[in-house]
Amino acid sequence: MKKKMIITVLVTLAALIMLPTIYFVYCDRTYKGKEDSIKVSYLKDHMFKINDEEVYIPQAFGTKIQTGKGHVFLFGEQHGFSPNHLLDSKLIIYLNKNKDVRTYGAEIYAEDAEKLNSIINDGNLDEKKLVSVIHDIGNDTPQTKTDECLKKWKEIYAYNRNVDKSHKIHVVGLLGKKGEHEGLRRDQVMAQSLLDFMQDPANSSLVKNGCYCFVGLTHAFQTPYMIEGDKVQTFGSILKEHLLSVTSMVQIAIDSNCYFPKDDEMIIAPPDESTELASSNGPVSFFNNVINIEEASKGIKTAIYALDGDGSPYWDCNDLVGTKVSLSFLSHPFQGLPSYSTLDYFQYVFMINEHQAPKSLNSIVR
Image (cartoon, rainbow, N blue to C red):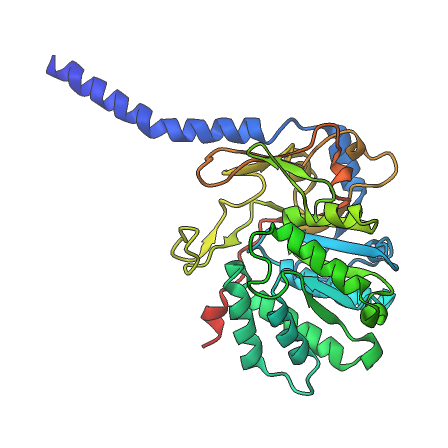
């Protein structure tokens, strides 16, 4: 009797230990979606590889980017991944150099944008002041406080030094002034801030060739999405309602580590401030049918995919728009609107694969 009881207890304990593993294996095999050879083949044929050792803008991709008066290019990142900020600086510099796009809209407050404009237009780089501004920005978005964010602004500063005044990059704080927009949704504030800036005659020379904006992932969506039963108007969708043309690129992170700072009260940070839990292919959140881009990206560290090419299957699906989650207390799933396709939301995907998290600014600057 005693032996049977011990066996029962051991079997029960083994089952309890194995249950989470079985559950996560089930989620991994189910939530990633079903592989589609047509989509995988399309992605491989519409890929712009990026050298992960030195981030740059592939010329073939750069020439495709639409610009011009009344046009906005949105790059929607997942906060905390590498090399987001490095690609960001390369994008705005490329667009400024090749297409004279001067306005850089950032998801920061107007006061911080004003400080950044002062820094990147000064004769000498005040790195101490720059670090201070990045820390201030980090009060709103903690994952910003990284070595790559510092490097980004130093690159923009170095570039601005070598162009004449009529072509310099100008930063716009999309969140407006602190405390002025309480009660409004973030996307509404961002859209109104950019619209006000673009419609001001005093800024005509800054916006004559369009604008570039670096924002969080869903803000770059050009169509509203659903979360917990609510329809969410996005930054991109509001801009389109005001008859602006918009191009969007969003980020997908495959098996990559994200920077989770210890000083963010909203999350429980790991000891080394790095986790793979935030990847787009699980184990917590799975983007719709992420398996196709995962398969197409095998052996590729960094790339941009054009989803809007001839014969694109992304006109007839909602891949990558929406998520399924394995642990709802860590992440809320969202979905695209019915009858809308992936290309109604965005046209490009910036993919990273097996990247390490950027380093904390605190670890390199004292």
